[in-house]
Image (cartoon, rainbow, N blue to C red):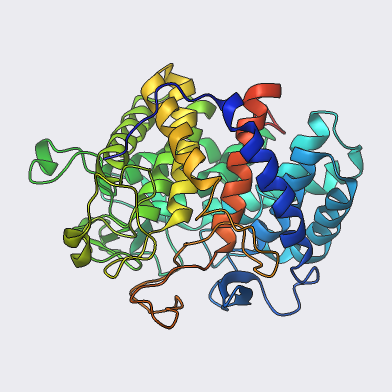
Length: 431
């Protein structure tokens, strides 16, 4: 169980955040700025490699440069983020085959629009960013499957039968497009309300991908999540839980849990909603209860080797049984902090600060300039065996992921903004 430090403050973490951004600068510069080798996904022997699946990580690479500028004021990173957005991100705006618009486009075009609205940059990107975000939100909302009750969800790249828990963070693209006054135009010029689709997707994610320990879920544990919910596409009925990247449908893939924690907390900041609030609280409570003492989870709570590990001790990335996933911790920490601030609940706030402290120090923060990763001990796809296991080790460790690095930077920016403001939200450009 996470051992929460009730005395920790964001101010006390500032030296660690500043050191992280100092290290981050060189790691951003070390990446291919032109994306010629494909989107960097995860490291092998400390070097970023691509895996052509859906190019879902490119926005994290480009967005990292913009976060670096935001945190440090170094103009070179603004120039890099702007040029990469212009050259690399347009295909992501109209990509009809994925559920990742909130990752790619809000992290880039959304960041530029927010920085302009805050008066940090000039307005040369404003028109292009607004148009890109409008189109992105509508394209994402068009990837729609109906359920038996007449509502629906944004379906994953697996197909219309598939509702992924991580898609909750793509609701951001619908939210921003809605705030920009946009709608999805459907057959016969039907105007589809993007905010309503956001609500329906989020409610169905809360209903089918999050468990609450009562009623239908009396057999299960409150706050547990499942990666994928499967539906009958003929009549929209829910059929079964499933997973692509977790150990089983009846255990919790912790990065999916973290996406739910942060996704629902962010949506709650965007719009007050009892369903968002309960899903956020339940998932955050489960994370606190199921994580090791320092707040870095193992990759899946039900993976068989977890039985050999002491969850009352700090996580051990070099154990012989199961890998940790530091990227899940970076995502979860921000979710805990946002929920704590929104609810005025210090338990969540202090839990988030405790996890952040762990990640801002060794063995998670990468101080080796020869290693392109910033956050060590991340895993990608354990069931597919995509993660490197080094000689002499039994499980993956020592490597980084682009989403883990991005979310550590985003967590660092969030902590700085708690001290200096203005408060950082995904909808800051259209608030």
